[in-house]
Image (cartoon, rainbow, N blue to C red):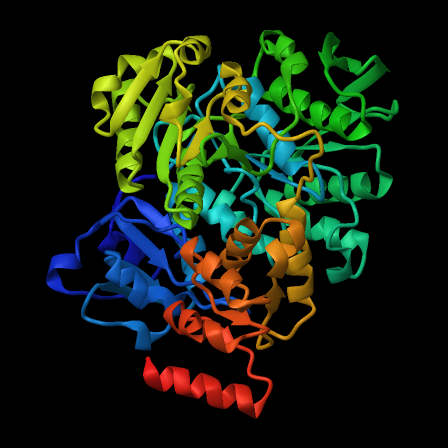
Length: 575
């Protein structure tokens, strides 16, 4: 991220500064929107966003205590003399305005991707295919929301020469806010499906809303195989003077015609365009993956005079992991696997997750990190930035793997060790070095860190029960969406969360802001408190002999009789 002064940012977002003199010219190099991800850093700026269930302004006092010095707010009551504040009408709009201003300072090509399905996969595959040809800044993970998009675009700086950003919407009116933030030069419209259809009057309206992102593009990539989508796109391009870059898998009239055959887990694709013919192989046979690769090839044919240089890379594409994977490790450790990409943006996000997970069991924080490749940043500057990130998050140990990071070992100030290859690390591995720790394993795909994870993972018994945490969060959010904003949520986590892991489930629910957890007996609540769970915990079956534990650990008894009330009152008065 480019560094800006507080006064510059105030001018970008049309805000008024309220600040002690010593804070007015703070240099900002990091934007925070979630108080749970902030650890420390004098150069951070917190945008107090307000939503249906949470209000960022409520967390300002805690953040000031933790060292945050600068805030963007829309509620004047939040302003104090303890930090610098920028007052705006709407903090979410201010974040988008800031990102749009940052976008305007850079002239390299920006690719915008939207649609119902495939946005993140296409973006990540384009990065895999083009990262040796361009220095690419892209949306981390699936950062495609009203907040995620500006956070992604704010990472643009002069080290890059190509931007790839995805945008998602769930209702009319959202895309016009993201258009000036991304302002793409080339657009990719992916498959249009049923997602969020309930918020649109028709499929036609949803297509038109998504197309708003491409109002100012020079070229627009799309498939002509869906007639309704193709008709809407052609009309849109005609009205805005946009060049149509169409493709087909079904022989329709288009700029690029694809054909394919699938056999034994692979698809053999041929492309015909402008009198030239190309052939490539992908390790997938499903229709969605084939269509996503067609989008990728079509963009590559626009950006490169000779696509042949990257065609062999199609066969090496792999599934895109959307989330960090968390597993139990050896020696009372926790593994956080993120070994499918390695860049500064995703490293910062992964370190935030590492910090959250380490708090639960009071674990040390260790990082196993590969070379960061194709960043466009000079190596000495790059690994100095990495070291600052490690210092900000109080990382205990860094294990660097790869020739580049090893050559810059002197730049790291935390406890460190370095190895030229993954095999060299595995050959010298001492498992005792990885105990009582949360361990982030983060590397570029070529380093094959899966083998490291396998060595450090706790060996399971023959019978395994896997809990899909993403599905659990999805279910929680579905129930939240059915409730009024003022309605609180209590989740029962008794009996080891019904056998699913009491601490892991409780921590996840706390992270997603449930109002109460409930346990059967006080001992269960004590265990959660000792593991770092801080949200309110109700004991459903309180017993008089455990009242002192409930008081000491701030547990809330379920008082269901006058006798119990009297006994608990006596315990409180004695405490």
